[in-house]
Length: 309
Image 1 (cartoon, rainbow, N blue to C red):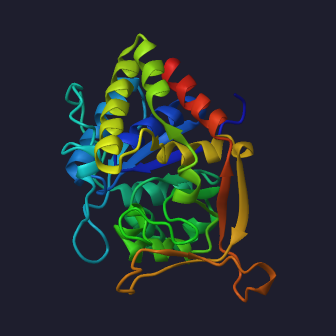
Image 2 (image 1 turned 90 degrees about the vertical axis):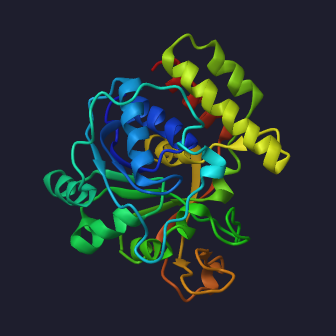
C-alpha cells in the first residue's frame, strides 16, 4: 500500500488489543507502541506488548506509560482477558525490555519531530491526556486521535452507561474530548457490529504459523468468556476497529457530533454523552463518531493480517 498512515498505538493488551497490533503491523506504518494500565496492570500490558512485538518480529519501540488513572485507583478487566491479559497464552518472555518508561515524553517528542501522525489509543486515555497537558499544541500536530472507547445512546459494558476505556479514567477522557484535537470515536455502538466466533477460530487454526496459533488461543479464550458469562456465541472485536478506521476509513460511516464525558454522575460516571439533536443542538461538534461498519470487510482485513504475519 502507498501512503500508509503512520500511527502510534497506545494500548493495554488485552485480547482484542493483540488483534489490533496485528492489524496495525499489516495495514499501517506502525511508528511505536505506548502502554497504559487498563485491561490489566501496566506491568502486564507492557510485557504483553513486548511479547507481541517479538511474535510479529516488529522493529518498533515500546514505551511504558501511566500505571493508573488521573484520579482514583485503577480498574482492571482481567475477568475478561485473564490474569495476564492474554488468556494465559504460552508465549516466550520478551527478548528485550521497553525502550523507555516515559510514554508521555515519547508522544510529545514524536509528534514534534513528525507532524501528521495518527494516535490510536485503544485503552484508557491517560497517556494521551497527560501528553496533551504537557504540550497542548500536540492537538494540532496530529492527523487524528482515533480512539476505541465510549458509545452513542448510553450503551455501556462496565455500567449501564459507561464503556470500559472511558470509565477507567473519565478525567483523562474529558481532557482528550475537550482538546480540540481531530478526534474520532469508535464506540461500542460500532464495535458490536463486528462479531467473531467459531468461523474465525477455524480460520486462525488453519493458519500454519506462530501468529495463527496465538490468535487461535486468544479467540478460544474470548469465546469461552462470551459463552460462559454472556451466553453469547460471538464476541465483539473492539480494538482493531480503531486501527482500521484510520487505514480503511471507507469501511465506516462517520458523523460529526458534540461529545461530552460525564465525570461526576452517580450512575453515569464514564458515560460519553453524544448530542444527537442535529440542527437543534446548541453545541459545536468536537468529534467524528463512527456509526456503521462494513463488518465482513473489516473481519476479512483482520484475517488477512493474521494470515500474512
